[in-house]
Image (cartoon, rainbow, N blue to C red; front, side, top):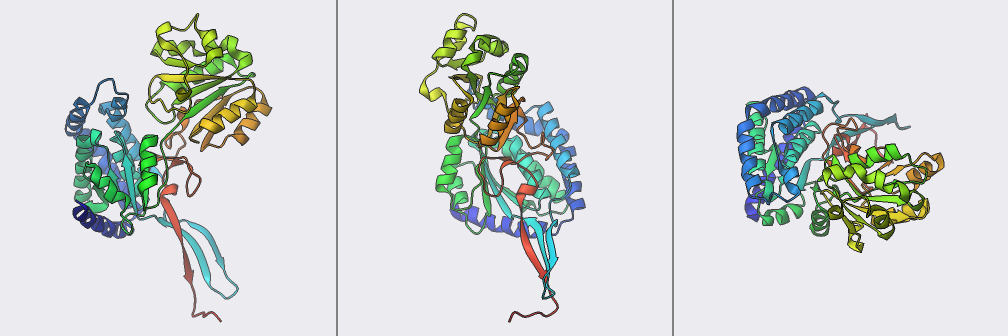
Length: 417
């Protein structure tokens, strides 16, 4: 398997050198053609997706991530059109000056080259990644999870057909075999892949970071908190908590832990009341449990154990932590956060300012839902992931984050003394 994959990676590397020469107009035309082709191929994509769905336990929360339907495919097509409408991130002059010796110096954005994505059961990522990588002049190597194998194959076959129709090398995108052995080859493909981005659980991200020889940008895992301050507005908080927890519980920006100031425990039952509509299971610490046991459904209310804090639930489950001060809330978040998205609900300007300054996360919110951590919501187009690290990129990674730069020097015969 290693020899076969390595041979294919060489062709991807060659393709990456070819697509650098494509004009933005050519790339946009192809992306629009791909978006238009998705409705034409509903049946093939959905039949493949159904084969994947049938292999999963219906109770598995990952089913929601895996599921495709016509409305989701339409949304994917809209995202691809949106990427096509964005300005190219390439060839932007970041810095320019003439040195005293007459050398003309420019710092210009360029593609990274070959970007590898390893991800779990989210076939929409296949479309998103290709659109963003092509728009930023990068070739793509994909390693999807076995759960989405049939969906990913169908999607990449469609992308290959559109590339061929437009005279562009189909090796611009390569889907690795679903077997786990392929991941090991990918992670060690030094010289063939320039950067790897894992998208999925903390377990996947840890595995990639610990085993990769290729540079890695960590994305995806979100252990998300919302702190309800003693100055928080109850009606506002009720709406925010409900949206952050229940909009799409299987995604990385969904709320995992509600942190509440002890002076607002009398409002806790009302604050979480809408969650009953979605049958959200709560794991409450002792103080919160005491306030909820008379009003929250018994079947949905449990005493919190230590493991319920610092957990990315990816389902309709949430923990509740009581704190005595803003400082204690900040310490709790600092200890358990994955540095993805964190929020405060407060009217006190000083509390908001301190929270926004002190919390170390890619995205920090005041009085709004963490569900907005998304490249499209930020006006960046479809994202390739949410970076939770600090080098190169942080937060939603879109077109600009898929470029690097090079220095271009033009002279008239200067030599260095």
